[in-house]
Each structure stands twice: as C-alpha cells, then as structure tokens.
Image (cartoon, rainbow, N blue to C red; front, side, top):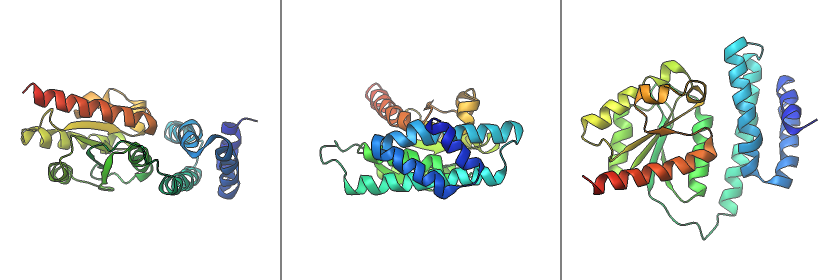
Length: 224
C-alpha cells in the first residue's frame, strides 16, 4: 500500500494517532517539507473534494483530516525554528489572511510557513479579515503582496471587496493580490472574477507566486 492509500485509510477510520505515526515515519525519510506538499496537501484536496461532491466523506472524517494536517504543519514549524537556514536571503514584508467570513485557517498557515522558510517577513492577520484591515496593514508595513485565502465560493466572492479597496486607494499594481484556497483549484475562473492577480495550486507554489507578484509590483512602479 502506498502512503496516500494508507493515510486515507487512517482518515476514514478517524485514527489520528495512527496517521501521525505513519506520517512521522515517512517524514523521517523524506522530510516534513515534502510531507506537506507530496502527501498531506493531496489528502486534504481529495477529502475536501469528495466531501463537497458526494458526502461519501463525513464531516467528522474531514475534521480528522484537518487535525492530522495541523499536526504535520506544527512539526514542520518546530523544525524550521530549530534549524532555520542562516543563508536564507531576507525578503520583503507580505500580508496574508483569510477573507471576511472565512475561518479555514490550515491552508493559510501552510502558506505562511513556506513563505517564512523562504525569508519573507510574514504578517498573518488570521481569519475573517476585512478588506480595510488587509490594505491598512499592507500600507503600514510596506507590503507589495497581499495573500488572501478562502475555502468556499461564497467567501471567495468577498475577495472582490478587497480588490475594490486596493483600487479605491490608488494602489492598483503597487499592491498585488494573490488568492488561494481549495475553491480556486476547483473553479480557477474565480481568480479573475474576484480580481486576483495570481494563484497557486499549493503552498509550495505560493512561494514562487509571491516572488513573481513582488517583481511585477516593482516593475509596475518603475514604469509609472
């Protein structure tokens, strides 16, 4: 049995301890960074998609899947704090958070962990963040990129308020808007609908996206 099938079996049995033991053994060989991208994220995507599409995964099982992922993320954070590479080049400030009325924190926290590991100065505003709070913080710290997360279509559409606030303050292009969350994987057309400047398929891809958007902001400012 491969790691994905074994992990899914523990989720369906609601066996959090068994899943943690399985993932610890895999991470000891391959590392926690790869664990999140290669194992945990695909599991979360499958569970979330199956829960929304067919309800063959119960709410309790989806909750256990989230707890398993949270355990893996906390272990990766602890490792990063112990062994932070001294040669990582410092990068600029960025702001992340979940849009107003959205409380699905795990994906955002994974993105924040990867960004921090790459040297970004991450200002995490948490859940249920208003458009005004995002832009206020970005202006306060000098962020060129705001990363905003949403899980469902209904909350994703609230990102349109953030797009409007950026534009209203005359910051179009100067502040780039990265959008993410499971709904953008399932419905990529939502990126344009809510006014996003880019998205990524997973937390690892988010680090590349933020670099691209930061450079786009610099180029936009230079050409202004």
